[in-house]
Image (cartoon, rainbow, N blue to C red):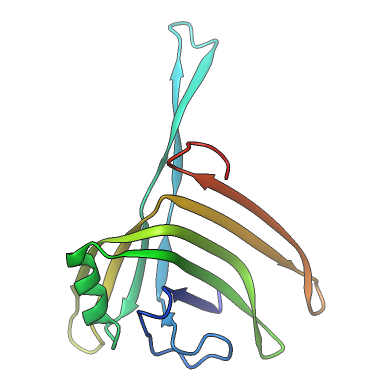
Length: 161
């Protein structure tokens, strides 16, 4: 990964100066997962599946100018219509998106901060959402975009969106 960016819309301004991502939040790391509840019968010959369990998206970033707004938004339960987490790669000096997670009706479910000697404090945010889109963009071996694959899930409908 060359670049991790989070775009929370115009109400949260980060300190990124990257072309096409100025004013967005630069991330250090991210984590997300989904799991399917599986139930087997006594003989373990048949299985049934239940409702998928989506983990909150977890991101880490350095303390910056957006930190007070993020903390206040968590306290107020502010809903963000759309939040994008972008994983990018450098392609001849331009950021090419490799993966984009688009979360709709997103709430900040927690903000925590930690630090130690010698480095800037690091914040961890968890984000809860009602709908998630995964968009993967593959690159050609030489230069450029090869193709796009996406998937969507609506938690309220418990169905592909």
